[in-house]
Image 1: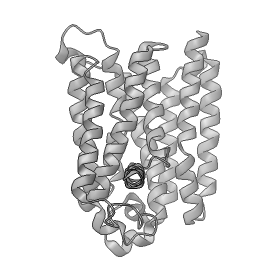
Image 2: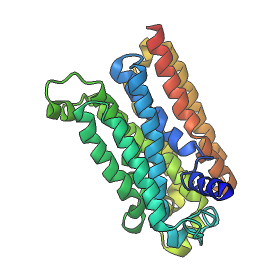
Image 3: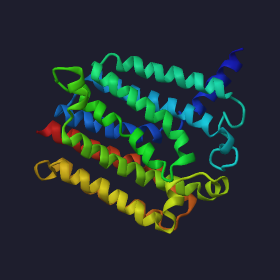
Image 4: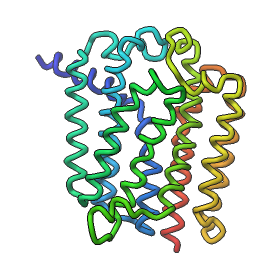
Length: 297
């Protein structure tokens, strides 16, 4: 019985990509950056804990939904052929049950924040569930993922809001929120297009829509433009002239983006996968610059 339980736990951990943290780190750094910017400094341990744990839980729940949605495709893709749902080691119903428990756990955390944040959490859940199915109908499903991976930004500002009414808190957000959201959307388009380049041949064979296939021979140029748009917006709104730490961080992040483009210039699977897995460091550098700048202000 003990061995069976350990085996089942190991399967669940594999289902939620526990040993592959790049996914939730890509979600976490922009969310924490928004929290620090919204609060003009450290937002408090409670809200940091809620957003950090909520990010991990929702990304894990998203993996469950994604693997159920893709179970008939994953077995034919080299990178995903051994996932537990497509191999039958976990049933679709069981995977959805695990995802539901994780999502409800995240929702329980959100309930400790304001009602306006709770309202935004429903929108975040909707986009999270929608994304796995977008690749059937949308030529660039990475844009849907970009919205899903950016929902933590308005939620962070709403959680720090002192608005009078719930509806006012939820809707009357500063322009900075939308600039940050657009910047993050462009970053997701950059790194997830690189990720899609890893599976290009399998996706062609299976008829799955991705930005890498839609962009065709312009994929590298598009990735470069996505990075440029992401970093350009951040350079514009982070007031780097008055915060040396942010200037250093943005300079380093720009260099990292250039290095990423150079690394994938041959479009080989290995380098593309490496760039994707390590892209979260770019987000961490930006976050570190924001934290240091507020600490030294």
